[in-house]
Length: 217
Image 1 (cartoon, rainbow, N blue to C red):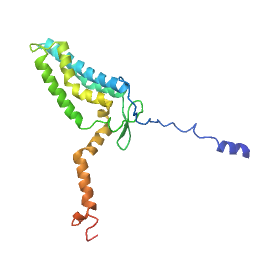
Image 2: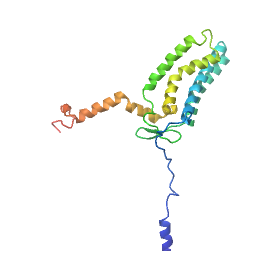
Image 3: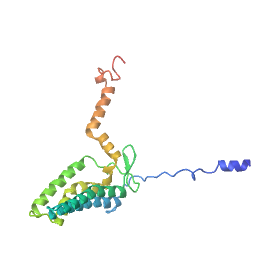
Image 4: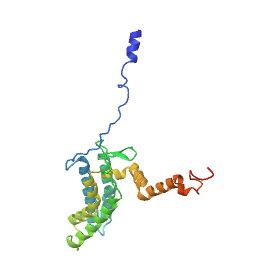
């Protein structure tokens, strides 16, 4: 009996312990041109473009009909909610720790892949490109379906291509942890943290009561 008890005690406990979802290190090799992340970024780009294009076309077709207004509203909300939701569920990003994120394949995103405030500049470029195309290529008389889709594809081009070239899932923007990461790493926030630290540790600010070199301490 003692031998049996000893055997049971020494049995490995891995069978009963839950398996943790492992993450793979950041991929430093050149990725294939149509990875899962890039595919779903393209889906977001053209899904939003087609959705808004249909809305604009439906409104033009039935400008005097309430039935068409109902259909355009339905397509609009399906686009605004449905496309980001499908993109997020199909290519979800996961927060690991300390500003580290992993994509849906459990591969950690490098710092270069993570978006910065530069994507705002890319969005502005896309808007400028849209007005250029609208003035030179698209029909000025009336918007057809194809013209509407091209218009919104140009509008979302800068924003979407930014994430495609970075090979970063657009769905990361819908991760609340990433919003907190952006706030913490914004230049103004960094500057404030540095200034706050200097107020406490820099002897030049010893006249402050919170400074460690204050004479009353």
